[in-house]
Image (tube, rainbow, N blue to C red; front, side):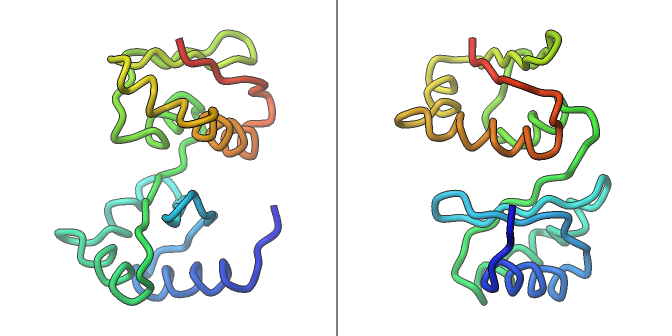
Length: 136
């Protein structure tokens, strides 16, 4: 994935505001998603969300800060948050997500399976061994 100038500027501003190094940044619809190293998410958000609010005020972009985890199940759980999954399990090269309700299932899949495709792309970027994600 190549970063364009605008994305690099957002990463630099994020790092300046939060004093946390961003591992990655990408757009998802109308918000920016930042991936930070393990244990850094709460520092990036700041006390009572002060860093996140400051970033949003200055850029007029909503943000989501996700903590990277080398375990794909835990990483996916933080990616789909605030949607709660009953189970996230791995069978060979496939991740199976069981949402708690049909509403959550709809939110995970999204219109024309857009959310699911975005989730697959992102997980594949960090975990090449994962071939597919299924919502049950």
